[in-house]
Amino acid sequence: MAKRIDGKVISKQIKDELKEEVAQLKAKGIEGSLAVIQVGNDPASSVYVNNKKKACEYIGIGSISYELPEETTEAELLDIIEDLNKREDVCGILVQLPVPKHIDEDKIIQAISPKKDVDGFHPQSVGAMTIGEPGFLSCTPAGIIQLLKRSNIEIEGKHCVVIGRSNIVGKPMALLMLRENATVTIAHSKTKNLKELCKQADILIVAIGKPKFIDESYVKEGAVVIDVGIHRNEENKLCGDVKFEKVEPHTSAITPVPGGVGPMTIAMLMNNCVESMRGQK
Ligand code: NAD
Image (cartoon, rainbow, N blue to C red):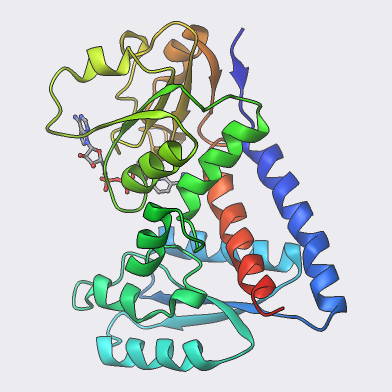
């Protein structure tokens, strides 16, 4: 029978471990806050921002919230980031993406000090990850590595197919699996024979951004399937990139949506904040 990988349970484990560490750091006089900046009032972004603030509260770190109007200029946003870069009480800076179109996202990402880049999106963080140097890891892919490890799923020597090559999921995911000694194939929108390729995967990581795209015909019997996608279906219920009911019986382990990868992203964000605080020691 397929094992359901429970992201809620594993993310709570991680947050509880962090909570303990934060208490120890506080006892040594080390404190920190995450600065969360939202520009505009996209409802989905507001939900994400709120969840991040709640997680900060849970593990015992502060959160400083900036809710800026849609018409905020790029220069104004850059000024705020510059100020936060200098503040000693701020361990991490997060600008909720996407930002409005008149603001250059890359410029914003690059303005955040790599020492406070808890999203792991700064080119310096990405470069460090690529060559195996210390630095902040992109939260969703790092969370997936934790899901696999804490579920005792062996990665080394396995063939992993990652569908998707975005900068925030697909590419860092592939690099982290490589770092864990998997043999990695990256598939994307121009890939030929996607189905045949996926059928060769021991671990199939799906970050395609298309609801219920992957059915059982893409999955090798006994494979591990990780579904990164998050969508709302016709009934306004959350679903992933994988047809869960069809695929689950053919897997040895699978993540559900919701309750799989989703909760791990915030847990790893908290992990990065604590890592930043550790750096102050
Ligand atoms: P994206 O749209 O930037 O990337 C999708 C990727 O899929 C692209 O690289 C594209 O080449 C590939 N692709 C598209 N159509 C394809 C096809 N027919 N065959 C093969 N490859 C194809 O999306 P993203 O930002 O990487 O996110 C992917 C999904 O993960 C989305 O559903 C997103 O909402 C979700 N997501 C979840 C979390 C989380 O915390 N759980 C975090 C980030 C993203």
